[in-house]
Image (tube, rainbow, N blue to C red; front, top):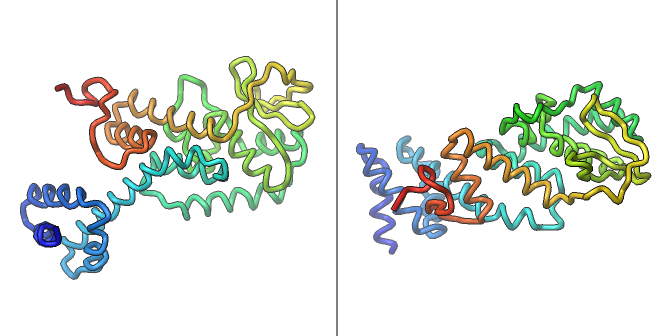
Length: 267
């Protein structure tokens, strides 16, 4: 095996792109066994070889992220904000966790300064900062991704609610997300509600018996599934593969045989 891996590594700076592509595909079949070789050549003087080494490292990192994503969503100890970051990385897979953490820290600095302790104060804060949900007919992948939502203040209602819950938990303000009459709303410990619709309308004395409360696992899975749906509807082949494999917890790049042609080649 070592001899075969060494032979394949020698092909990574070949002048023929097809030869390089085939060599990389073969190397990836060895999985973690090629990691020592990647580390050894990570700072290779040959820029072509170095670029292909970095590409292999990126692919392996992406595959690991895919394989761990489904398990991560079911982890009850996963912080909600970290889950939102991982969903974001399903679409913006070149972004870093650290860059998202910095965005979150900037958001929390302002949020804590205002320190909303009631639904009324929270509604005022969200209106003042222009957080809105797009109409159902104008949904884009960005509306499910933490980074763009924090930057543009536009996102799917339940994503903005999840951001609010994560932020409120840091100031010990307990909120929950529920479905009420086919609409997501926020509910506090006193049974009062808040909806992003109608400019952050308050809903006093919500009938709790009519509410279906959603935990973070269901919310994160919904965000991932809607990203996948958007990828299919927009013919984004790359994301169909990436998110589909992640939701199934697959490490390899085998076709998703549950999808129809052209997403899965016909036999």
